[in-house]
Length: 223
Image (cartoon, rainbow, N blue to C red):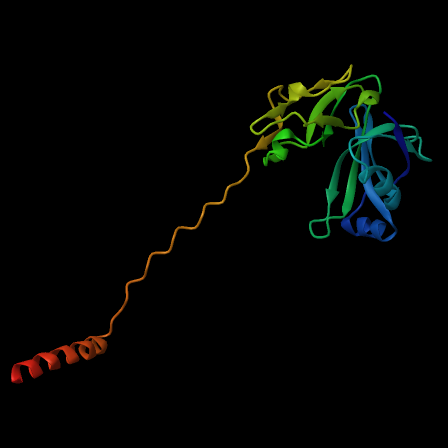
């Protein structure tokens, strides 16, 4: 796996007001920590973080460049990002230090490749999960997994055990976990035929209809 270099500097831990000030300066607040590292508040250029880390698919190793000896040349993964509840913008990032000689657990995205046979026959390709968790050395982290779906017919599924796993990588998720399936096409029920509404006859209309009949009977008796 390739590493991404970003410039990071320590900062003073403070209030929300200081965090807002950093945002106005185009900086993103964060924290660096790890099992063997002291927690260090930091700041990073927002545009650099977005282009090199946040907007790139999958997990990526980050080699930190800094003037601080507490941060310089450390290797980390972005463990978590916090987002603004309204705008959706990233407001904070956690950098977790990793040891290149020790295994880590990360989530790897899935790419569904090809057009399933069942889709050609009218079915619908339905991904169940979009990523799976793996365990491996940091340098062996896959960027993504290709999931070939071409042979799937309606009712068929692929599971975690069907993934092509490279050497040194172990899938943490259950082997029977369904990744993707092809479901039958949705059939809309035809609307029920409308029942014929009963013909309403007004009392006046009945009387008008009956009157000529009565008149005919009277004329016949007179004759």
